[in-house]
Image (tube, rainbow, N blue to C red):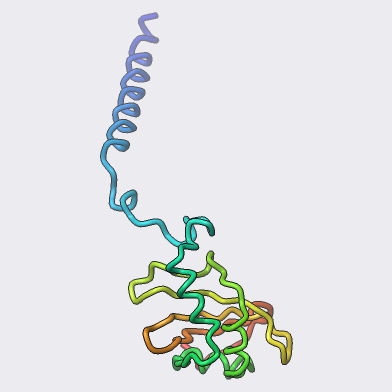
Length: 152
């Protein structure tokens, strides 16, 4: 019994330390706990507010102006995707909310996915709606891996 007593005391102290640490961590929220939920953390039903539905109407507007970033143009050229195909996808595609960044610092970015009618490519287009135009950030072929060494 005398030999086991120090071990029992050590186990009790360890248990007390764990319990104290657990209680302290629940009381003090870290910056990570206070952060806004990421897009992946929010369900589709939580995301689809009336304001966001209005933003999606902008994609369906055939008279919308498009601005293609240098990166998007490079990716399109590499992946053989035309501006017309991009516009077609933007107007018809479904929003992939898991890949969208609705709380991005520069404004929301939507991941629109669809199939091109010309050559049946399954593509994802990242679009950032601005006040006067739609910015096409990048274009991704979801089925084929393209080597685009000049695109950064």
